[in-house]
Length: 264
Image (cartoon, rainbow, N blue to C red; front, side, top):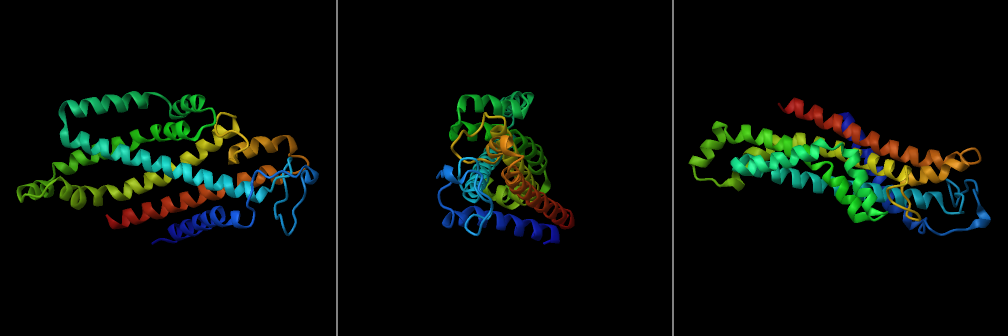
């Protein structure tokens, strides 16, 4: 494994540990104490409190956990759906391939952010429809890559030899397709997670994503803007956490891409 991959994995692990373990110390992100309005950092509250007297550490941990969880769920759903439809399109061909390509082209014709905004407008702060919108905006990428690569691989001498020997589709997928597709798919998933986190924060920032009082990084930035002069940490803290997550995913991508080049 390359140094960038190890660095990215280490940073991402620290972020995950913060999201999971911080609630053991700062447990309630919604608890208000108006007497401690914009209270500064202390031993008990290293980042202080916000404009409603809520623990900034508790809210950051909760928002980070939400971003990682919802982003990962969206990416896994998009990858699974895209891969399954891509393999089906390549295997079956004919009208199945034509139908799925038309569906993918129709989704691709809409800008992904517009598609997510349409779902967000219907979500009204709900998780389910927002998750569906983020997943639907990404599955076409996996479909196109898997379909194109699988069509080439299925026509290769190795796959034809496996079929002549009586091996089924499961063996072909496991032995021939997955090893070739895995490096590219993992890279796409890392980029997809970064994109999902950024999109989720963007939606929260413009007020059409997760709604208060649920902590979310973009929403926390919007709430902090009126108090930037008095307490810039309220705005800088969620920006820093999101930047660290994106940096970790970029380092992971670089390491994975380098490993794939060396493997070939």
